[in-house]
Length: 281
Image (cartoon, rainbow, N blue to C red; front, side, top):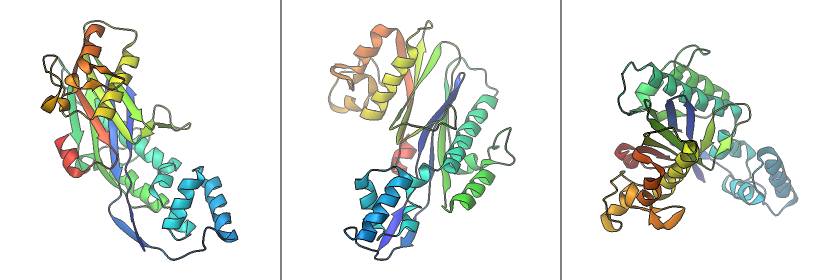
């Protein structure tokens, strides 16, 4: 039996008017050979199940599926994607990538009259400095993490957004995991940044930005569109004419308009999305 492993992660990190996220890391195709282990109905199988449950915190159902897939080999289960993503060293690597991307964004010397958005491909990400407290580049930190975790990983892509006064960046991560040891870092399976323009500073922008991010994650629009777009048909891919995720009786445009903000752009990342979807983004 052969098992295909992959490692993907989304995150959002933020500070000031610059946000980095989501970031995607992926392990290239890697095959492992497993062997038949003890049946899960046997005493030894049940012992493995309990041991894996205690070690990972996963439900018995998920642990049972993992053990069945790996033929009862705990050494292979320890390399399983979801388990690796819980490892602090892996999370620290993700944090370094996010902070490196954010510093790259902040060091751009452009005078913004409107927002700026950019993407970093694998080669660009690899050469970014690891940060003020780390030596070398992100490529060097990746090599160290691979050595410690025993999992082959690659830096896939990252997105950054920078805004001047009069704009706001809303963010949302679905299935969010907060690491207690890593501040301002949120990890999850889906991530979104929503760029809004507003004429005045509003107290509820954080909640509004979170709801807009939820909509982008749930409805997966292709473009923002305009308030003049009619709902239905091809317009369903345009964000403002889509039924609002949290109240389908109105469109997202009808939800946003009375709140005094304009949605101008967004970024959406999804774990496991195809390369075609990534390029379209």
